[in-house]
Image (cartoon, rainbow, N blue to C red; front, side):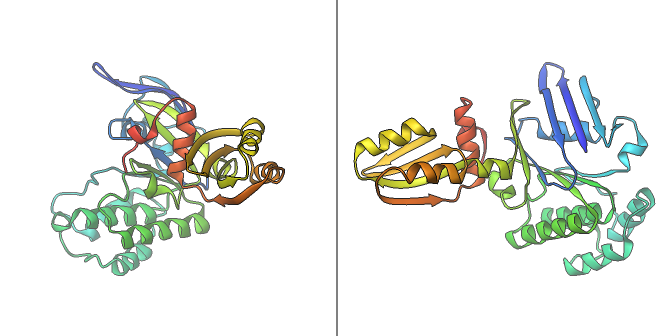
Length: 301
């Protein structure tokens, strides 16, 4: 488990991270969401010990991370711009990382290189941005570490490659309990992979919740009431987070379990009733609007 308690970081006059506290559980995919400049990369660099927090504490499995070799053996960090040695090819990078990480799976690494169509002898500086991201991800996945921290992991990857990487992460989670921590500015990018999501804005955490809990406790309903009085009953009996009326069609975002919402609607008269699935973006819009923020201005598509 990674515990982040009250960390802050400033660069001269700029407060990049302000009193952030988050707990990242093992065996989950943690998504760190926020616009460029929200503090995502700074948080990751403090978690990995690249930066030392001005305030607060970060521990990985109980070990303080800054300037601690034992803690750093537990994770592999992939920055937004992966670094490779000048003039190196994939073989030379494998030699380096396999000397650093005792559990590095050399055989699997070369197998993945072949499957992903990456020439092990080709100079990495001639790779495209997407190919460099693929190589960095393969090095990280094959490192054998418990945690994989990724900054804008899927930026530069085509849709097919994104799904391949997500499938590979899921496989390693099942096989050896890998815990990916992924920072991104794109909600849709993480929708089908994250278990827990934290939303950063201006260096602070607006929201940090388990995705399944959020999905289970927010319902989206489309309906047509037989009479206006029936709508008034629903508005009185349920916690309405958002309401949109177009003609006679009423779309409601409601806080509560599916069973509770359906039971309440069972007591009123409707011409039409349908429960709709909520996207991650819709969930965050609902949660942050209640908190007084407009996520559509905070998160980029």
